[in-house]
Length: 225
Image (tube, rainbow, N blue to C red; front, side, top):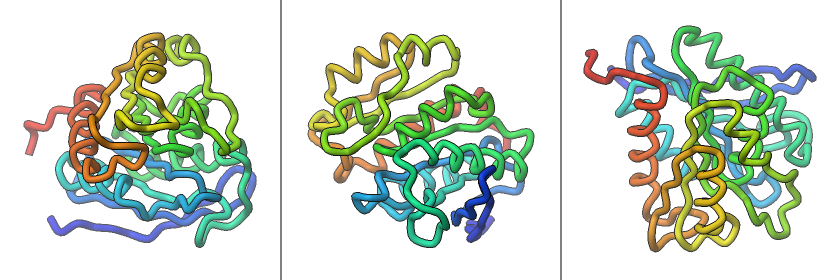
């Protein structure tokens, strides 16, 4: 099947219209994924190799419906930057989009950097994500003004599979802190040696590992045609 990438739009509960790209490479998706981008005030958008690699692996290799979208105030999305708080509504609208298009497919909620922060906090109040994939979660955000991540015990209480991915040189997501956070949350930590917050030259490796983990977390059988 030829990859089917559609430009889409959808509206949040507070009336903000967002733009995105949905990709589906199979007739019936085995799973679906919402993928959230990095900080919009520091160049973040849906158009980045880390996110493209994850989208391509989940769709092309694993048969997922995937949605990349721009947060409010980013590129062609309406509205204005919401400090990482209003963007939770954007994630909720994105989850509604994939559930509407593939209602029986289990949902992976993924994010990178700012997007990982928003995705994790959204998942604390939304039951639709069946698993979480968080890349470069900002445990030390530096000059990025972000709400603190939920306590790992709160993540654990949701009893959802979660994988936490970072480069060994990530200054915003230090390896030791991430391992401790993931352990307390009863999630899995994946550290990629020799790369940083941007997973330089390791994007495809990270994407393949996340997609393989996601199949198990969502109980997806890839043996089906």
